[in-house]
Image (cartoon, rainbow, N blue to C red):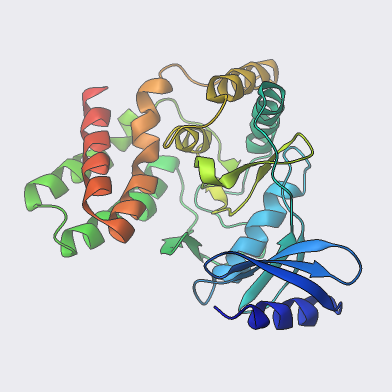
Length: 292
């Protein structure tokens, strides 16, 4: 993509002259503004992508529990947000992040599947569409909006046989039992794989590229482990201690439910990138059934 488009968008959204630009990959650019600020200019991947991401940054960021880049401006095509220079991972930052994430989740959400305030129901996870639709409980939400559409698409792509689809159907049917004790809806970032956990130069962990919605807090925790995260044990330990101290300990059996809560992430990647992720998603579904 021509960086001139990012320059034009940044100047339009801020009223500041852009004095420098640097590509960060794909349709994402670092831009330096005339007032000295540095920002990230990102072109949306779909009609509602910018609105969903802007709302998804504001919602987790409003409480200050975790560090989230500020939204500097947006329109139908471009999102301009605060640029945070990268730093090194540290145990102290990991523990602070774990404590903050526990409090973010406890801020709650209106319902399972609710979008962020002012966010569209039709959102995105990466390049995949994602529907945020309020549901009465987490099993109904997860089965309807986080498993079924992606299994159907994967089957249409030839990634799953009818017998393999039946495994996911069984998971959906048994979700009320597989999910563990009922919990109130949590305020989720929604896409906490390691690439969206940004270790900043200021010694903080920053959450970027959200797929925010009201969901089950174990989903954010499970996604932290998908590709590995530096000091993950520190994050989870601090989280568990803070949640317990706040009177909302995690339910027993969380580790056994990790694969269940990774299903949506893996299915999205199966639809976008193919067979290897399809096999991982199927294995996670089978393991979830064996765990009960």
